[in-house]
Amino acid sequence: MKSSPLLAATGFALLSACAEYYEPVRFEAQGDEIVVVGTIDHTTLTEFEEVTRQNPQIKTLVLQYIEGSVDDDANVIFSRVVHEQGFDTVVPSDGMVASGGTDLFLAGNRRVLEPGACVGVHSWGGWNIVATEIPEDDPEHDRYLDYYEDIGVDDAFYWYTLDAAPAEGMHWMTAAEADLYDLTSGRAPRLGSPAICDER
Image (cartoon, rainbow, N blue to C red; front, side):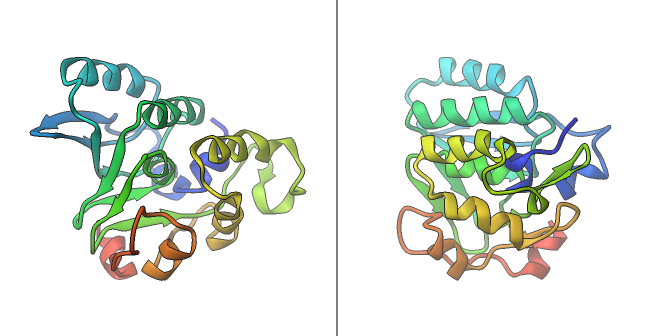
């Protein structure tokens, strides 16, 4: 599998060590929210369609723990659907998103990061391609730049993620960075410290 900008713009490192074993995303309706836990793969959209069919009144996804994606194409498709259907996304105070999880969070119509939430970003690389070593006009960037454009996220965030940490690393965003790149719909929260995020 090629690690692409979407996976990289948010969390290849978390999955690289455990790509052979992961827990696919699970959705659980709780009151007026759907709680989401796991790793995005080719089954995620189908599971999402099922839970939303059963709970059509719910329009909030609580991203409890989304460490990334093992299927970049599935991640883009799923996240676009979340955006197109007008869902809000929330990372709770004890929650974490990284890799494709961060891109999923960005798909929200209204985006909330509760104080203490962890948001991880980094570069991408794979199949003899390293994001920071190819020109900015290389088509390898386009698919994910198009995704950010479609969901209304400034492409400056994409370029920031490439420099934030190498593909094998992870950068945990500060509240100031979240504010700079308009990650939330309102005032930037106090995000979790790197030490706290590393422990999750």
